[in-house]
Length: 308
Image 1 (tube, helix red, strand yellow):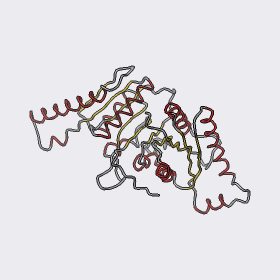
Image 2: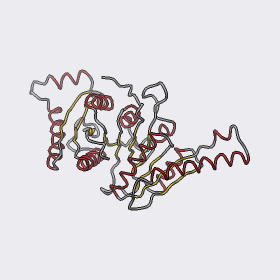
Image 3: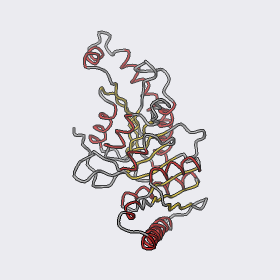
Image 4: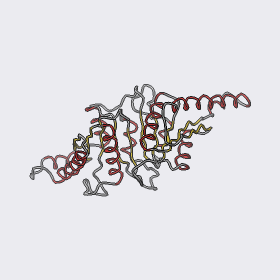
């Protein structure tokens, strides 16, 4: 976890029909709490960032206010300044910034400008009618942001008790495992590690005993790889491996519900040759629905489609 030294905290200032609310949404409060904890642990620095998504005409009115600093902009800066002061009281270096524009786009531009190594953001619940638990800003960050993204959900307790790593046996899966193991150690949490074996591709070319043997070989190889990764860590509670014959996104949702997972750690991928367009079939189906916090990492080869 020492890798996170330059953390961007995305602060959602809106609430209901108010552009800047006096009270921060609970997911945003959770994001701030998690970022403060992680920065304290790593002796890292924080940048509290918010973007006001208004029309160009409204932006001009705010920027050209006859009152000096427009009340809306002033209120936004005051809220972020309180977060900066709170970080300072904990001995942490922190700055703040308010910009105008689409939140997800301005967050990624800020990451590119100042090489942030982690974005922490609260999710915006859209309710049962939409069927989506992570809002559009969170999904776009998970798709397009070049650094790891932690989308937080409000938790009943400070310590995370259960963590799930979804591992696809690739390099980015190993990076997700590293973060998941570190989180489990820091919180004394129960760690679950999942690899879903989707045998449908084997069924197109194999059958009978040959299919069974091929699937068994894959299970053995997956189990060995996961055990080798876990051997580098010591845990308060022994981790549980789940190598299952199931489509990965369905397997993740089953384990999240069965074991009351509070943090899902997974890798996201880019479709070859198309920067930032795709985060993998599993992630695309899963992330809008997942009811827990998500920490997502990308491979070193990922290139964001957003440019400065």
